[in-house]
Amino acid sequence: MRGRTVIGRAVGLLLLAAGSPGAAFAQDDGLQAYQLVRSLQLIQDRIAGGDHAALPMQAKLLEMADDRLRVADAGDFKDPKNFRALLVYGMSGGNPVTVEAAASRATTDPQSLAIAKGIVAYLNGRPAAAIEILKPIDPMSVPPDLGAFLALVKGSLLATDEPLTALTLLDEARLLSPGTLVEEAALRRSVGIAAAQGDAARFALASTQYVAGYLYSPYASQFADSFVSGVIALHMSISQDKLADITSMMDAEREKVIYLRIARRAAIDGLTDLSAFASARAEQGRNGNGNQDDPRAVLYSSLSTVTSATIDDVRVRLGKIDRGKLSESDRALLDAAQAVAGEVVAPVPAAAKDETEAADPAKSDAAKPAAETDPAGEVDADALPPVEGAVSEQPAVAASPKPAADAPAAASMPPATPMTAQSTAEAPASAPAPPETLPVLPTSAPAASGLDTHDPTDAAMLNARRQLDQIDQLLGAAPK
Image (cartoon, rainbow, N blue to C red; front, side, top):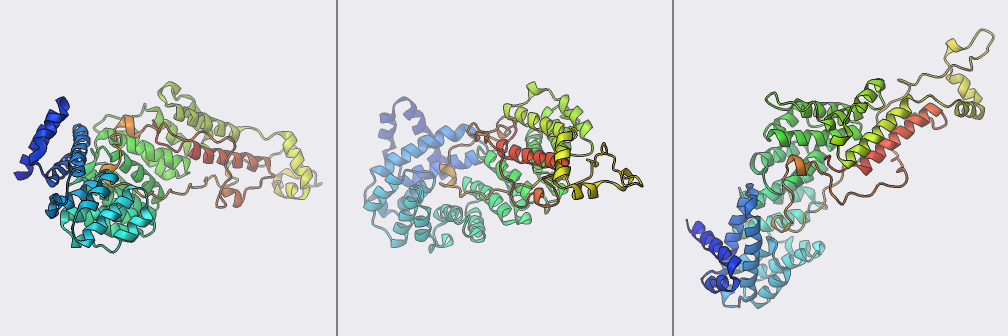
């Protein structure tokens, strides 16, 4: 009840500030720093639950708390709650200059001062210094309101170098602050770390918990990125049934978007079964409301078979896609797919064939089927080796990117676009420009496993795979 009273006063101040900031802060004299910061946390928890209208209130409360803490003196910080509020404010996206200046005026215990110093280093983009200062401090040994944020920050800092320790810290953050923006951020980070560690069980559990509690968070698009990347990376460990269980908790539109993104990535990476499953689920829809006319689903389902024996059927499907309903990036993807399909069925140039045989006549003769050689030893010059089924058509699987350390703390990150069909599916405006040359295939690519670069047919297939690899780099963003 007291929390509601405090936040009510803070909201009243926000309304006053909209008309007369001076009047608002004149009436703000009765609120302590910890009360303002607590109001900020309550607003953030509403945001985590999907109340996007509270985002402007968060920004205003951060401003109000900053103004209060800038003028706080040593007497204000005699109350430990006010100094803890300073630390929480910093880890909620506060101004490092304010935190450093206020902490310099406070007289408190050495551990609290060390936390303040670590937070300043964290906010100023010095993660190594921050973790050196904060690493010895156990989040479970400080009051829960501070410990939850401290565990979240430490978990974020250690995500790359000590992922197992990071996961433990993120669990502690959730334990200390359930149902809050801290838990939302901890789960979101756990999804990416678990995927990078190859921990399918942890990945599935964290994803399930996130979808159940925070699907409508304004940061859910970041979860979607990690989820799709994790499904691709862990495709051998996560069953289609488990994937369906997780997505079934989403609304129909978000589920479709997720499956479209999975289908796209899986098709480009050559994961035929996963691409077919995700495409079918995207087309299937719910409650009889199918998406069979969605050109993206048709495009992505066709991609995985673009070099297969059913290439003629694939070319027909690709030709029927309405380009006007595709985004610019997907139109480029369609063009690339049609180009690859065209190369697969294109006849081998006779001149190239003759040059190959001249370069290695013994190998060329050995490759001829026995039925093409007559008893006199003469070879049918018009006979060509079969194309279909000659070599494996599995393209190289792109390496799954490691999740970057998420900084600063959850609340300090700029509001991400909500995970809707429009926004989650859209490629970022900052997508890299197309490379001017084809990328070099990794050493694990199929080129090193049976393809003869001197054979015209194999060379055409290798070029097709290179184009698919280029598609992955050029169009790796989310589909529109």
